Image (cartoon, one colour):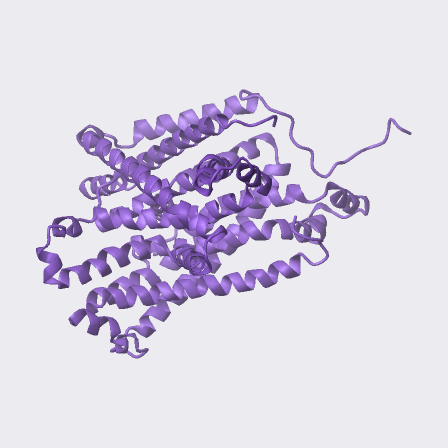
Length: 271
Length: 242
């Protein structure tokens, strides 16, 4: 009877697959035909004219992404830390900040800062005459602030978990070695928490990249704003948007590869 | 100061026409409809997608992989614009083929479609993980009892995967409520857009944006409560956190 026994496992993990199986080659061929049709039948003659502006826009998007992520991450460290060890008023403040930012749409925060705060600033002659006014009239600082705060709130939540997740024994060992609190934080707690948070940081950074086009709604000129301009000039609906989607896909891919490389550099024992 | 008067002038939030409260509430209702509709559509796409990814043939699996990867790599704002135009064009092209006149797609239907397609990609991944977490023995037992695949799905797989799926799904629900704000960019009158209109015509920017923020925040906090209750119910009989 043993030969006729039929086993039907509920879920069989698929065997590891090679990239080029017959059906893949077929799918790639179909995809190639679609791409060819898109290039051949759609209008791309606007591309050379807007090339430099588009490159500038992509540069602006990347600059916005990296500057907000860097400053936001620095702000996320204290936000995460005070929630783990800080005195309760600071911890409550940090938790409230995270809830507030994570509970409302980024677009609303952006408009609140740009239109709301901007109109409040404009009413005070002292601010209008100060040396900061040319910067406060520009949209970029508002876009930067909104994106930076949003990244800090989401990443602060991640860092809270990462700080709390570092094994107590390691911190006790550091203390037994006679390190003072700051040295312990710098040498043990922060690096260990950072390693734990790195996979999530990768996802958060991709989300941040996908949030950057929102600043185009307050007149910051990024890749999305350039494409919107192209659409208004040429009355084309699909071509510019498809190109933009392709650009963002490439940027996301590069970001993911970059973080994968960083993760492979983490010293770890075994697997 | 004029600003302070504007900020504290709560009469502007009155429900009847001189105040804008009623308009804001209508926008809030529209946002809520969008979120619920989009999330539900996303759930249907997600369940189908997860089963396709786990049990489908090689071509179906690859196509679903392309779908989830592309949707998760492109900003929601760009997707909303693309799908908004592509969706309405496709419906009109289909109607044209059948010989019916062109129709105006309502903003609500197009919005639900767009949010549903975006949510579907994320929910596919969440549900796929949850289904894989169900002990295979339970599904085998259902087969041994002679249940058809659909009955197994309804009676065993879906209820058993629920505790594993709820944390991911609740996150996606909160994202759905916030993604509705993006439809302001294509001109759909949901909460964020009507807030901006109200603020623009009364110049009380701070008041209206704070009021709208409070509405979104309330929705999030109430959702968190409800989710906690649902999760407690779904996890009954499971010991400790997984």
